[in-house]
Image 1 (tube, rainbow over the protein chains, first blue to last red):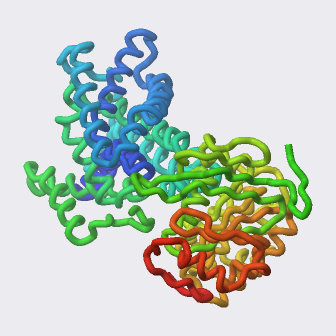
Image 2: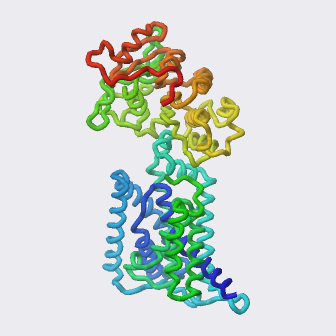
Image 3: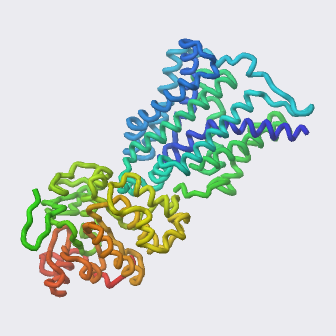
Length: 291
Length: 259
């Protein structure tokens, strides 16, 4: 039964990874941008939530109603200015620019919020749980984050595969010049994709802030960003299904590794990552061409 | 204002003194041409003569160094490619350039996303290419070259172009497939589309075009109606035999030669 519990905990942890990785996956899948500022953006969203809560006194759980649209707008703006400008100058430039953005965000947060740790106070919800049998306990927060992750990823997958905007996003990801010849302004469509990606980053940042405390450097020091990258690669670059599957697989393996020896939790995840790179570098679910 | 000269329909497209560079290389040099509504005109020439560059510049993918592109009386030279689509200039690019991870139907739907009002719809494309409805759920990347070319034409048609630019339809296709694709031209023209095509397959171009232009090293070396051009004159213009220093040696493609 202890193993069943580990797997359940791992699946839920994987949900958080996947939620974190979703924006990363989307930016890479559509624009081929590897966003090194991803973690910092999530932490920025966390701080934005702290600010929103302080100013409006809304319950922390509902802070996303303000933060997520703000971040979507920020994403569109960032894409149309900074990211598009760097894209025009080549792939390496986007790496440098997002790395620079990461440094800027981290230091700006330190300036405004100090280096002290913050968290999003959600009261007893952070520790409340329910039990199934004697061995399995499920925290409400973990379950909620997992459900949000599944809804977001499946929702996005549906949006991409079935809506007109989603079709255009996939077309632009395939061949932006051909999309132009079909009348699509690829810069606008990139902007929409970035808005969606940033919105998911905001959700991930808020979820993280409820899960644990964070400080301005968490965006680069927390292992979460590394796990998010791994989830994307394990699942197959640019595939959202894959990202969810990759996140969950990573979470489960980590939990099982931690069960064998509590020091081995991270190691087990890294070994899985290496194994995937060795055996199936295109990712476990890569169905779609990502080249 | 449109002008009605004898024998020449109202010009839909007028290209004046177009010069285009690829970096330092001058790909097009003072190219001019006029296409009347409802016409089919063809650009022929060897590899690297600047044919595709001309189409890419007219469609807006490539910026001109100097010269003007006037479409239906308006200067479109500064419009981005997607805006020219809205004006009615649609190109079928060289190498088909379908969206490989989208299905056949999705490719057509993307083409129709910003369509002008007009006679073409996905249903009408399905009537034109009767095999297509059965395979509409297949990924575009799984089709054969000829089928992909048909989808690429369909994707352009559903935008309801007034001017259709066809770049190297025959590239990499078997002769029988090429002629099957060219057989659809009359139906396109009947729907009111004007066509400018680029073709290495000279015999195919001469067969369908009302007027042929031969490009050599970025310059038009010969223009005229196919019936009035002698094979010798075409050969001369194609190779630049009388045009002073000869360019890189190329052979005119026989029908359907693959790249």
